[in-house]
Image 1 (tube, rainbow, N blue to C red):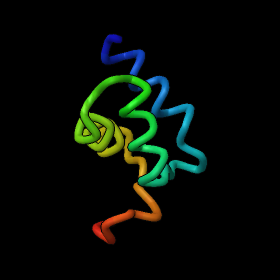
Image 2: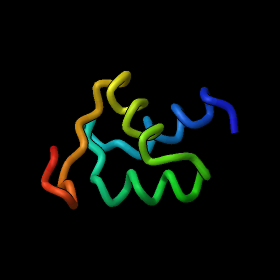
Image 3: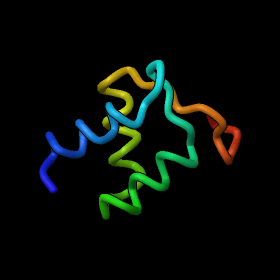
Image 4: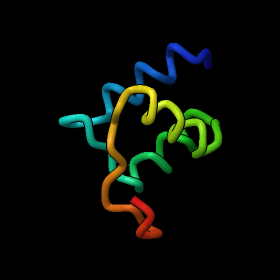
Length: 57
């Protein structure tokens, strides 16, 4: 899957510019990309990670 497609999926999954940590992990698994890639895309798109499972965000 190309970068633009991943960005589109992340953008659609984020409600009110927010994405739960759990959903980020699910997307990474579905798209077969590292979770860090989803995090980088969220940073670029200014999407806030919420309900972090590690308490980091």
